[in-house]
Image (cartoon, rainbow, N blue to C red; front, side):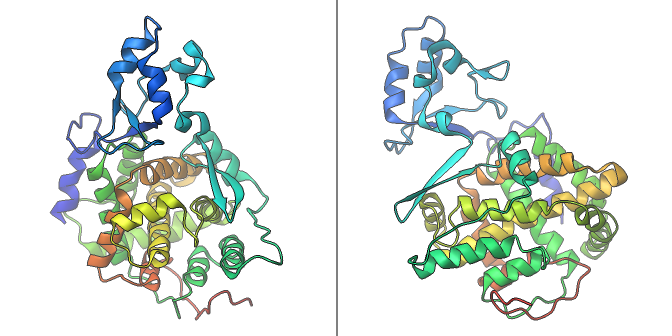
Length: 371
């Protein structure tokens, strides 16, 4: 218990720990060359000082712009001074494309949006139209499976936990959830992310309200905090989410599409490879469930803290802040897998403990069963 509360020292604006120094913007090699040759009297010296070559450079990720308090040092009044001063052609490939995400699946280009962008989060999470794929009659089984997964994640006939159970495919049933154990593992995932890398202040502020809403303190037992967590879910979170246009279903569908689950994007394969994942498919599912579980838990705590003042706007801002914090940390995926493995959660079905509602009894589900 003490471990979790010691980490709270890292949750304030005064934090200066070395764990909070890693956020950066990737700069490709061609753009780095332009920056080195820039003759602009103001921007030239700053570009040569603030853009540095990576320890293991690649053509796309050759150099980095280090963030300052989660902001790019080249932002001026929320505008990019590189673009306003020298033109769009001086933007790195990362900056020119964000928040757009482009993947190639069997030679077909797919485009999605990164929910770490506030406007992208608002557009995607409030869009009433489902995210859909149309693989065609001649598509292979892997592409057909991906289409069925996207459809299942947005199927409102099931709760979110049941949708994830269907997608997990290895789960014969969902058992009643131990709220205290679920909260304990989710807190471990949250604290690990805070300790790994720079954490935006917006996320830290949300986390503080989440902890206040659930009465998380040193004097409480896990059983007592779990009881408050289950009560907050029942009394505040569930009624609020019942009136929403399936925000978390949209989040999961967007995450699944963007990461090319279950095929897996090249980035996801690379990150999970660092985690030693022999079979990337179960690890992809575990990572998706862990991200969802953290977001859902934070929303539960915030609903308890704000009560009737909790709004759709705040829920969308929370999903966006969590997406930005969790998905932009390149060392987080291997830590998620390690934490789950240390908890004995080695199968996709094990991770569903984190996704289940604390106040529900679950029926047995078979993969992609329809009722």
